[in-house]
Length: 225
Image (cartoon, rainbow, N blue to C red; front, side):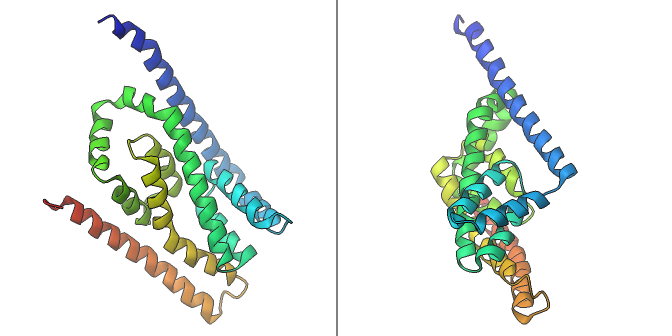
């Protein structure tokens, strides 16, 4: 009983950190809606064409992910700047690093506060994901309807292990990243055969990823699996 009063200030501080995190993210999101993302595309192009091209691009892309810039923006830009397959390597590296950073920020600032606020509801999510956190993240990465940035920060509030999150994220993002950078590489000829074929493949992989994710989810829900 004596420990209960001591826990209250800690719980309030954890909730305050979560509120600050959410407020900052909402503010950044609103700013992006108002200002747009054209400046980020220009910056990524400039750093990609600099002397430190590949490394600089990866680092700026990772920071852009933390700041909620759309991942597709950086991926298409990587294809336009570096071509394929180097652009795919740059985009996947930047996206994975950025997703890991966003996860870590959310885990440090928001996890304890989320536990204090949502209690048993978060515990239920933890229990569901914890049985196979790798597959859970892989499924969510493959589903095209799940927002990239929302998953980055949302995952940090759960009990998903960081190593499993990073590996599943990289694998889940790889197919669409490779095709998107191919599209960026061919963007100067949007009526060409290669671009049209890549666009068709990109749409097919989005649909196929969603279908495969549903199959994985159904398999997980089957007793005995």
